[in-house]
Image (cartoon, rainbow, N blue to C red; front, side):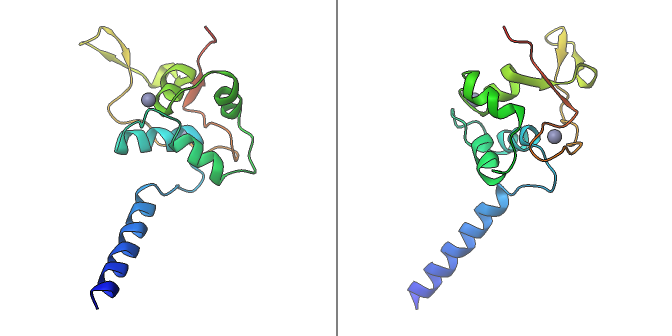
Length: 126
Ligand SMILES: [Zn+2]
Ligand SMILES: [Zn+2]
């Protein structure tokens, strides 16, 4: 009997874990990665972006090229160094006296499969 309970609990936990990192319909790779890093933090590697790409294998977004050639080291690197929010979505921060990300990131605008949606812009190569 305890085995049955343990197995049920494990299945429940696995199901819960799956839901915590679930994809949203039409959510682009950057919005997904950003949402996951916000909820679970950056693991210091490409964890969520890689998960998205693994799950959407049919698509070949520009971000893939970034990952391969751009030396992107982790999820938050992708969101801060390779890509960033569009300028007009940034807000002035009195603290840093610079434009900063808003407290709440705008919702994904949806994108053709594999592309980044319109709230993101590619950072100029440095
Ligand atoms: Zn990181
Ligand atoms: Zn998006």
